[in-house]
Image 1 (tube, helix red, strand yellow):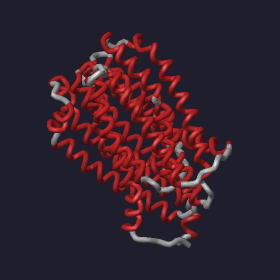
Image 2: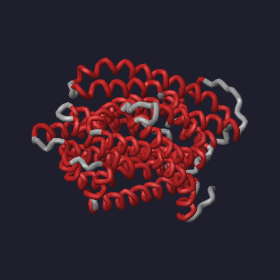
Image 3: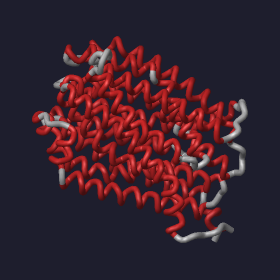
Image 4: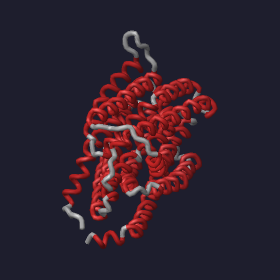
Amino acid sequence: MCEKHNNIYYIKELLNIAAPIIMGNLGFILIGVGDVLVAGRHSTQTFAAISIAAAIVNCIMTIAIGLTSSISPLLSNYRGAKKPIKRYFYPSIRFAGFLAIVTSFIIIAFIPLIPKIGFESELIKPIQQYMFISALSTFGGSLHHSMKEFLQAFEIVMFPNLLTIICVFLNLILNIIFVFGWGPIPSMGAAGLAIASLIIRYFMGFSLLFYCKSVMRVDNYHEKGYYMNLIKIGLPISLAILIEFVAFNSIAILMGRISGVYAAAQNLLCTLTTTSFMIPFAISNAIAVKVGFSNGAKNIFDLKKYAYLGTFISVGFMAFSATIFASFPKFIVSIFTSDTNLYKIVIPIMSILALFQIFDGLQVSLSGICKGIKQTKYVLLASFIAYWGVSIPLGYFLGFKMKFMLKGFWFGLISASIVLCLIMIFELIKYFKKNYKKSSHSQQ
């Protein structure tokens, strides 16, 4: 038997975890917004260069982000099963460090290929500079994400996300100093943005490292099985995120070959949708932790409650966000740019982006459920079919063959999000029917 509560209890439990994560995620995206604002104010060339460079770097860094994202759902399952989890502190750091080395080398190896892709000649040097500096920052970013995931497994979410909010303002100050120059520091354009990001990533990573060591007693521990479990859960997450990132960012790269302004437009659209996405993404993290704990404790009633109610909150918020985007497109775009060419490209796509929001909120909640039950292969399967079987081929056809340009690719993204949701819903229904039928009867 398990103790059953009303819906308000489960909503509060989810929001207790999600609220600080929402704050931190919004802070994290605001760091990116700060980059966009400063780059846009510096020049359209700088904006285009970081749009392309960040697209490539982010695709590569998702390898580390996806794999370290397995830390909190795995350790939450261990907690639910009454296993000690503080012992996994140093193994988590070693795991993050190894991933940082791998991603750093991949980024550096990609730099010589930039002149061969076909970008405008004046963009090549700033793109390469941004990528090289970003390669040096991978350990700071990987350390920060692993420590944040480790704390999240204990449902310690306030300090890591408060730290992110503080870094929003620090990042903006550093961006202005390094991009425009100040005193003896010269104007460095796109390279200045990368230097600011490097400083912020290391500051956040080591801040969480020292915080963890100050609030809990941790011992050095070795267990190969932990790394294997992280890879088993995290590799599908990593590849699924990579598939999605490459899909979104390949649009910037493909359109950027025609003109840098299209890459800038795609970056702006992604910044808008990612800003609102951070709230359902935080709820998805809370779902993964709570579903993971319930899964480890074999409590199917709580598991389903957290899954259903978390999904309802996520989709409800994105429906509200979609209404705002569709109602005030000109005002929202004007916050980021005054470039008339960007206006002409971005504003007609805002209504498409608004519809995309709703399905995006649903898919990220379903992904959280899959992480919690350690069935991330469903996320990988759905992402591959949706983005590379539907989105990119359809977007390429509509964008280039039908001359819809960037708008055509966003029609493809909406189609992908619908397919993604349908596949995950189908697979989750099959999983629960197969694995929890007996368990459900025994708890009634």
